[in-house]
Image 1 (cartoon, rainbow, N blue to C red):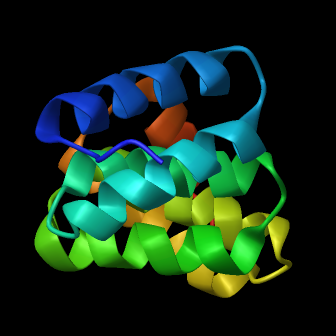
Image 2: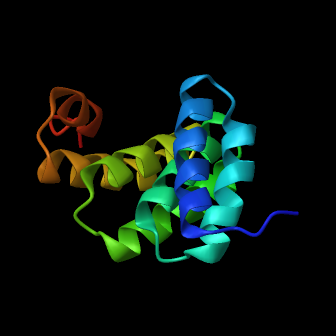
Image 3: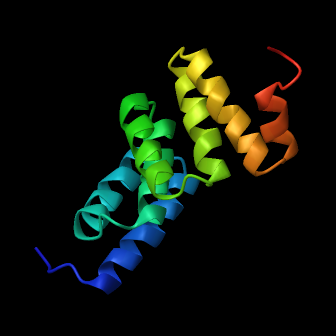
Amino acid sequence: MQERTPETHVIDFRAAEQLLAARDPRGAVKLLDSVIAAHPENTAARLLRARAFFLAAQLRPAELEFQVVLEREPDNAFAHFALARTLERANRSAEAQRHFRLAAALDPRPDYVAAARFDAS
């Protein structure tokens, strides 16, 4: 097997983005595994892998990966929103609501605000 270099990791990351756009989340995860193994601090790769896990309906791995991103970037509105969607899909609505509200508070995009349902208790 060919030795992995920083350049091949960038290529793998970009290819994983394309696979995710083409609705091949499992292929994206495979590429991102080696990138994250070599660069565990790479939050962008972790966020992309979390999205891929979510799209592959691997909710627990998605949740864990979104949590890693939020430990590093607690003000990442998208990560809060995506974690909320993951929790919602896992029938954990109360936990999801907290992250929907955090996402809306951090970034008042219409879709975040609508999901936060501030008018509901």
